[in-house]
Image 1: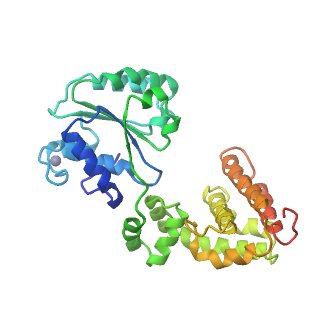
Image 2: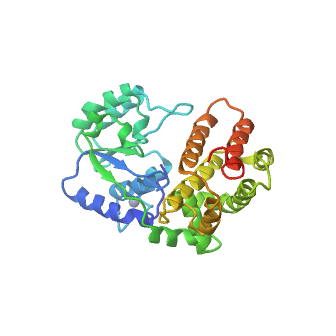
Image 3: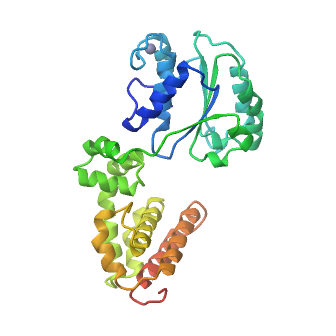
Length: 333
Ligand SMILES: [Zn+2]
């Protein structure tokens, strides 16, 4: 976690205020902090924890005192962070045992001892079970913070021992105002947010990586393919650089999702509202809902397969062939 001086992000402020208020009163000693991906919950926690441990706190942590300096150096003796270790996707029981030991000791700075587990769903079953007792009775002045994007994947016994705090999805107006300075203009910022499924930090990353421009190129290729002006082999070759990125199938799936919505007459919450007239032109050529659902399922499958041992060229050729068949040959319709 990056313990740097600085403020929370605009969509964090309400939850941060509530956490600070609760901290003055009767807050639980084990919190489950849930947030959608790309909303920067780590930063919120870093801002909150820094302020809590700061020896000269003002509105935010001072960034100068001994506690702040140790936090920024990652060597604060009252803070422990648990992640999956390098090369592993799991948080193991040995790591939890170290945490149990940490939680049983008294704070060295006279404040709180804080342990952060991130992501909580990375704990394997042994690790989760080893944590249960400490969740119920941690040491005095110990606060356990479990961060999660998928709380449903946690053991129910673990969830029930934590106080739940959820970060609501970011407010679209605040997010757009925050993102626009990083985009050429507001329209492009809006496009990036749609592509990022409204996750602000992912939108920022897409802008930095030039993905909004790439979307234009991919969309124009796809439009030509559907209109019968190019074929699946050419289309597959043209996105060779993207075969190994999850972005390509995700992008294609977003377009199919948008078509399904437009076909059902639902124009709100499209990923790419700026493409609506293009969508209507394509849908007027007689795509059936079931063909779109089939295609969407194939794309979800691609995303899974990409992490395994598959030949991306063959897979995308098949996908693009099915796109080309949506209208011109009518095989799926
Ligand atoms: Zn400080």
